[in-house]
Image (cartoon, rainbow, N blue to C red):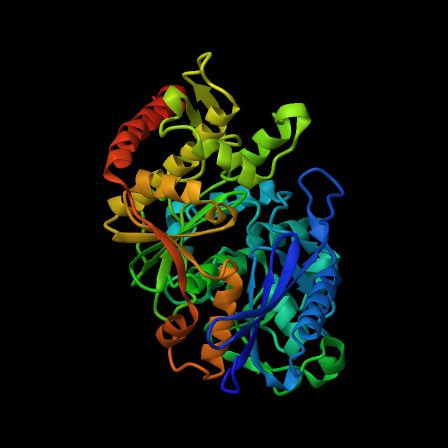
Length: 500
């Protein structure tokens, strides 16, 4: 750090934790705090949390980062938030939460989702919002559920917010959102980045019940003097509109132009491709949304199971003397097995498939088991199956004429050289890993810097802040092996679950 460094604060509000990061304008992560919380599941299909828990975690994270870094709060020029989407928070005219947040995982609104689908066919929904299918996790069905089941809350709600909107309200006293965070509400028009009045009328509320839409890099305001002492920040610090976490992570990895793909192999698999304009899949398999980069959009195919299959194996098939290995140890075992796992092939679809083939009835499988196969073979086969699933989704993007020059890997799996090498060979493109593993936090920090004029453009910010740690290049011999195995993988899925 030098005297010329500007300090940028990021808040990444996830499903089970909030991460607060302090960055320099050169991309160095100075301090990071993780504040965890436990979701409430009072009944089947119900997932809630008090909005105050999110806010308390945010405050604790900011204070811890300031204490660890010993940075004068006045030197923090700006902050921005990346966040999970779809978590609904209802507030009254004074901004007080009227009930627990309905977390994105909550699926209580199944009937309401079907009701919306009857009135707004999938082809209309997709064209207007970029969302291929209505789901009970989106805010629109959740609001309709409130209208029917908690009319007092519905009628008293002055603003329907999602999580990032709520945190910005607490920080600034202003009700705002951005197009990325609201892209999965089902009531934001994709191209216009404006509210969809026809859907609002169906749900029974008006534009005045929603926050103002600002670009992701725009200044909302400064830290509210009323909470200055609580958060230990200066009113000099600007608050930026921010982004949904998937788009922020893409930005934090440098995915700002067509040709770069980011993939996050965590519990689930999320793939993000940057495009210059909304690009619709004729078969409605891929969601389309605004990027947090101005005038860009993203396609983001996903799968519900990914790295979690390795956790399942670790927890249910322990090693010698019941040892519960960490993921690094499991992947070390996998590295000792040759490509193709000596004939053992796996499907990772433990809870069904999403993209490119939506099939909730699909399940996982191991095929080709013989006496020569040991624990390491099963681990390797699972790791390879996730790489094959990633290729399926990237091939889907290619089929829509999306250029794929290189892939940037994020998430827990990006810590494993073994997994990264397998992906490079399965995909037959270079796979790179950013120096900063907290890509969503980095993306929020970039937006903060651009909004506060620390950088003149997104491109300048990416050039200064995003650095690539290492790159894995495909090896022709293994590429040939995996080409055949990938076809075997596709054939196995079709034989077990393909539509006749």
